[in-house]
Length: 231
Image (tube, rainbow, N blue to C red):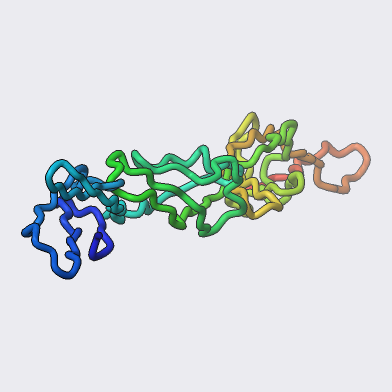
């Protein structure tokens, strides 16, 4: 009979013993082993004058010495099938959503290529990062020369990167803006928006001047209203 539990360690297991009945005169019996190295069912046999007795015993598979995967990253909206594991590892349920942004753990299974080692099931950490949002880029933005970006109203979720900056010269100008989703699972994105800058209005008015009838008009000059930015 086997004398102890056996676990695979790469060596042959010879844990059977023979018990002799009282008064046994047949001498010591040698034990012969079969399949007694790898995990599985091993056999111990004794033989005497053509008679054979045998007993089976189990060699257990050993715990694998496998490094747990780390530094795994997913994007919001992914399933575990989108997260690649090292060779030998599989997700217990690859159809699971990784969920919201943050640190999560999910069950994974390691299946050794060597059947002498057990299958291992553990929790593996996954960092879920923000996804890029879908958005519609604002168009048809107009401004008057000399004004600032913060004087231009943008759609909900949009803001200027430099709101106090001037819109620039007449024509099409590009300025950076941010789109921020109301859902924190999406990252903030920076987009160049086109602003069509039109001319600022300028009023020219002759200065008031009083003369006597018949006198030649004097050049009293003109007054200007509408210059901006020191023009």
